Image 1 (spheres, one colour):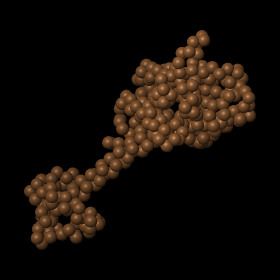
Image 2 (image 1 turned 30 degrees about the vertical axis):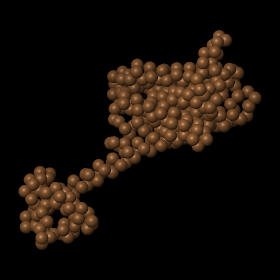
Image 3 (image 1 turned 30 degrees about the horizontal axis):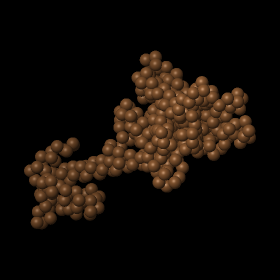
Image 4 (image 1 turned 90 degrees about the vertical axis):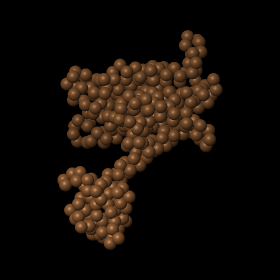
Length: 363
């Protein structure tokens, strides 16, 4: 298998595994918590290696998961005091834990085989040279096994507890009333976020994993109102961004992991602007359509009260419209056969216009 294909598959698995749990972070308005966990888990990884000397991925996941849950617990503990808001509590906790991890990395370089650049940026290029050996047998690429297993675990968690996750996400109180233990679901989800972060750590680094956790899910959120569809779109966007990022990096001869994040950002911007229902352009078109319909209703109602006709200047003065807006509204009404513009420049309703004027609410 070529190095390029290994990198793209690894990136796609990172995007898929992060997107699954990231979808619920976005829906729960906990995007910053994903940022916090992705940074603070460094302390768990370094602490496990420092105290045990083991580079076992299982121990690393356990250590990272423990620190991830510690992050969530500390944030909630500070937030429940009522003295600071949740975003401020996140800003207090994760820089402290992340800084301790960075200090350990830089202070004990002989004991911890991770440097600061690797922590922040990662290097997905080297995944093709990292093989997994089981009982002396080469089992293939380590990234495939770890990220593939993490993707399967995340998918199974969502499938098995989909109803509970959905209720706890959209109506925590109702979920508790039904006995679904939303707190347990919450901490289980945070544990999976922590595990996903540390498994993806070697591929994309602490900073760039945030892009895969949040950006694909945020883009999918703009495209649909259905949870299952959102999950599918988030996975597709995350995986597709990873593959597209690889080719962008080859084109510009730049960082592959950073290019993956850039492509994901470009996809989000495209969705933000052009999403069919929630995009900026669609919202502008909807607003323009509503304003035009409202202006037409005002025009028809006013002409109905003045059967003798009204001049365009009077219309503009009556509704404080500019000359351009008055002309546009009247021209559209004339073209639709609702208003007649007489040679004396007096506007009157046609039969069709009278019928529609009677249907305007309040008249």
